[in-house]
Length: 231
Image 1: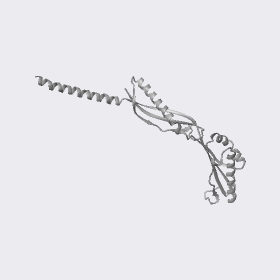
Image 2: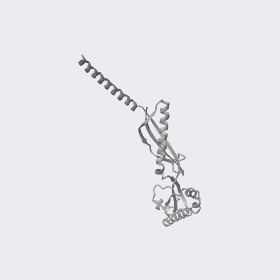
Image 3: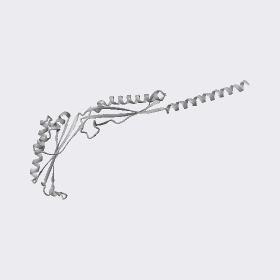
Image 4: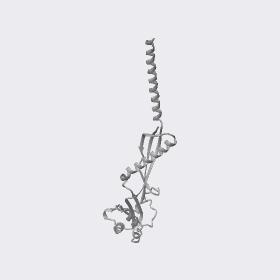
């Protein structure tokens, strides 16, 4: 009889052990599927450290030579204006001169206009952002000197993103964890380890959200997405 009991006992132990293993696997699988997905936002207001100012102007005349001389003078006046505002020659880039012969344009319906239209421009690249803001307000003096301005557009840029990236990522991750802890508390659970995480793209926009690049103050923003296990 003892010989019959021993095999039955061993079988029972095996079944119990197998049952525990299956139960443990199910429990681990359930824990793996219990997680919360959260996002963490971090924003920082920064001041632009670079300005790009595009100035375009034109000059019209019936004589080709006069048209060229007129636009060359306009460029010289504009360059002198910028230097008087405190910018160096290295900051200023002269754009090529282009001339349109209106008589050769079959679509030109303005027969009373000058024959030649000369166009040129100047691009200012500088880190003196505050000086650009002041100089833009003085462009009326160019008009007083006979410079016909077709376009005046300034873009302000922020170029030191790498210097503030680590701090913003830390802040975004911390905010994500705080949101996850709040969720876990309300769900009567405990926050576990990170299941997975992904870093969003950094964006730099105007503080006014106009996104035209005309604001000196910028807003740097990043969003991180993190999954936390729940215990």
